[in-house]
Length: 112
Image 1 (cartoon, rainbow, N blue to C red):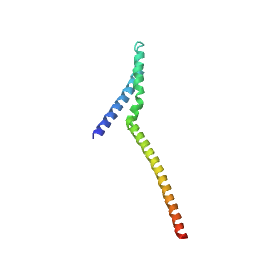
Image 2: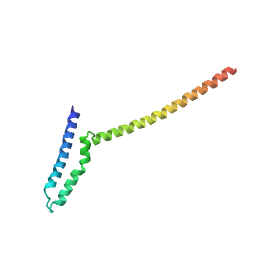
Image 3: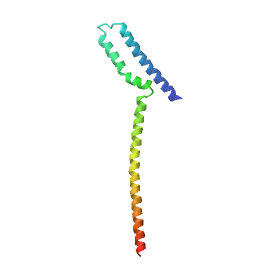
Image 4: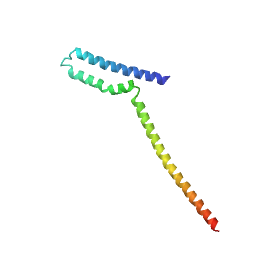
């Protein structure tokens, strides 16, 4: 329940920022910014637009923290799979060696 509330807050916040940026762009299409405040206004708009990528990720349901944690989990599982494959190869070598030893001992018993 707590996770769902947090996800809902993130979604609403991201949608709010997205709507703010769209509203700001519509506003700018009708009103001219005075030259005195133009540099400050451009810096603020640039900052808002640069956060648009994170906003879109949140709106479509992929939060950057979640993506990073899943990437780390995937890397850990790949490492584990590589270790298991190496261990499997070692065990196969041991079985082959045991089989050769058994064949060699049975050959020695047969010759006696």
